[in-house]
Length: 522
Image (cartoon, rainbow, N blue to C red; front, side):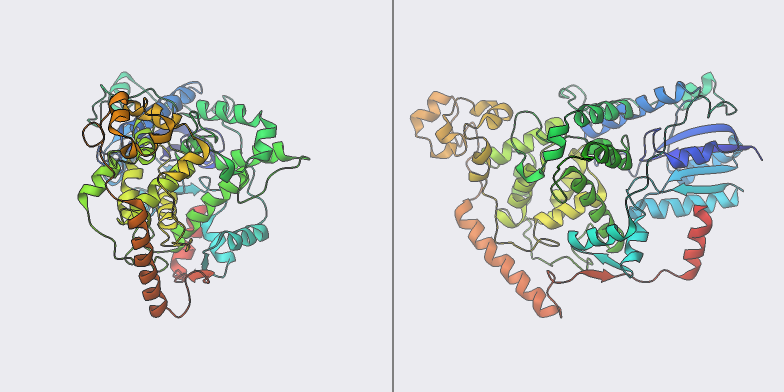
């Protein structure tokens, strides 16, 4: 039977390796590719201007690609549960397809939409393609336990074998018998979003370093894969957090939005590695994709994964509440140039290096300000182009030494760490130009410069640039003792130490849920 189908784009904003889109094309007479601007996900408070601009560019690119196949993207504004019943009726829809998403909000939203679809006689098909593996299958393979170490995760994945190979994008031939009804009314009603739509001030946007979209993602992937020596010797900890141009691939935003399939990335790397000596996980590029899988698995298996309270694997720390400190960190005015330069780059460009994230996360939490990692998580979610629910929550827990990583006594210095890779402070001069006349001896600690040096640099500390909000040497020692107390309390409350624990047992799903899942996945 020929169907009228909606393919619902959410993440997975691409044509290549999109099995749910291919499932929509099977026996399809009319195709409606839809993207919903859900106010819960897309609002000014939670989506910064750079992130929004990336999405706008990505949707434009997707629409262009669909038009080359004689189709187009229909952008719909509203809550999915409100808009779908109208679309089902208007377009006489008989099939809905989408890419599976493991985030808690997505799961509850998809459950609601599936129920509505059934009521309207619409078949629902979803496919797994946002991750390398079926995350539920990973947990099943570990006897229903969530792996809490990377080594354990590697062992499970080894038993599952390599990820599935990606599938090609649909061609004009695939679309031969499929049409997309479109009219001028459609053009107006379902037009692409604009940069102004969320209400952001667009007058002071910075140059777009990383334009959104599948075409840009594939171009960047090709560019990096040609650097075979670099790809084979890549080791994440050896890359620089404060180089003037990125020392890593910056493909993460494209994988987050699904402009680039993780499986395509994985298998392209496999081709480059073939027959050559290369680095291995966890530090290699394959290793970076496995870290993503690791945090996704943890986020599915651990309830309340993005919170401290109610999170069974997270150390309960008595963090301070200090709105002034939090604002100073967020707004790049801590008085530590290295920290402030990183936070400035984050706000201007939407991306900072992995080790730069380590520095500012440690500073906000256990290192200096002793503020709850959930506050940092919110800021990163708004400002990072690659802000990903599972990875953001997992990394903040790791860097605050709350979960996964337990060496809370290893603290990043907001002065010495940056000097290792940028003695002259060129990175600081780029992002905090008002400090650029300070000599290298003082650029990381301008408050130590004699008054005459500050005057010559045209920047007086305490007037033109803030004094440090804390004394790192003193406060970091105090905070280590506070973390020690939190750990002691945890050990007293638990029968086993969190660092020894290999996994947490998940509640078994009801058999009816399992049956429903099998039926839906057909």
